[in-house]
Length: 308
Ligand SMILES: NC(=O)c1ccc[n+]([C@@H]2O[C@H](COP(=O)([O-])OP(=O)(O)OC[C@H]3O[C@@H](n4cnc5c(N)ncnc54)[C@H](O)[C@@H]3O)[C@@H](O)[C@H]2O)c1
Ligand SMILES: O=C(O)C(=O)C[C@]1(C(=O)O)C=C[C@@H](O)C=C1
Image 1 (cartoon, rainbow, N blue to C red):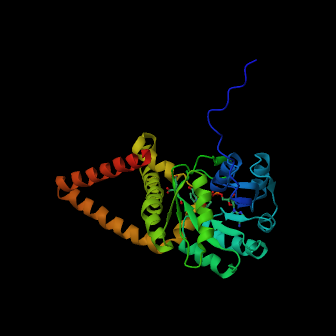
Image 2 (image 1 turned 60 degrees about the vertical axis):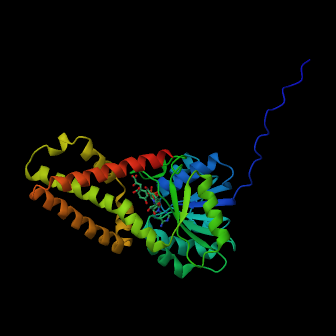
Image 3 (image 1 turned 180 degrees about the horizontal axis):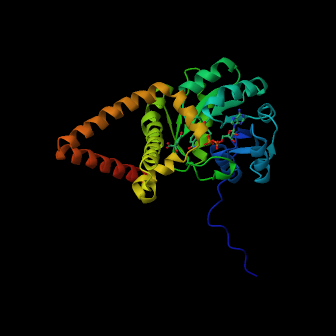
């Protein structure tokens, strides 16, 4: 009788979950992606709880078995949690924090995934407790979809998660939320909230503003000329429509809560667009080629960085 072949390597020891219970409030596109990842990755949390303001979303979360428990209220979901992650629209963060903070266990961590940071930190500040650290975070990942059906577990892989702790945020709480995102496949970077809001105004909020606006302008033109301009939209315009298909509530809240930085970037953009208009009017071919080449270089370096 031959003895069984010994394994060539020891399997890596199972890691202790970072959190005993993780509560995700708002299992929409981002929240359900976190839950789906946590289901596959036991190193994140031993137990998953979720809830949503919408009874329909709670029912879908049950049907999809997104969590071990779907609670009826945010307070019920948060009570026994070691980490509560707010995945609701930016404008709802303050109200949900006011509901969960009074019932959270001492030492549990509150975190969020909102797309603006200074406004959320200010909205949550009045409800904070000394014994519950708040770690603001923002995964730079997502699609134009929303709702619990639209999430997927690999959404955060190789994406940045920006952490914007305040001077009061304890280092060990920051490190645990950082580890949570890293175990979901993300890369993390710390920065202050004002800097985050400026960066996101240019790389995320302004492009959405432009996409919503260009779709509206083209649609107005189609109505005015009673012509089929949109039927002929090839891939350039189509790329804008993907972004323009995003969730109206989410973007209303982002625009209104990152007002200053977004208006500043829009003013800069308008100046640069005027410079391009001037070059076109005066036939400044060199200027036009220079701008287009710059765009190509940026696209190339983005793709190279993604592959790295
Ligand atoms: N979608 C993206 O690309 C993306 C990327 C990064 C961060 N974010 C941020 O993540 C958060 C969620 O965005 P999403 O795309 O997952 O939205 P979503 O609409 O898919 O999900 C949000 C969920 O929150 C629920 N909700 C709203 N108010 C609530 C309340 N008071 N109490 C409990 N539940 C409530 C909604 O019913 C919905 O199910 C937002 O703050 C957004 O800015 C979104
Ligand atoms: O790719 C998209 O569709 C997104 O809208 C994702 C996107 C972005 O602008 O990059 C949108 C908002 C978030 O806060 C982070 C990511």
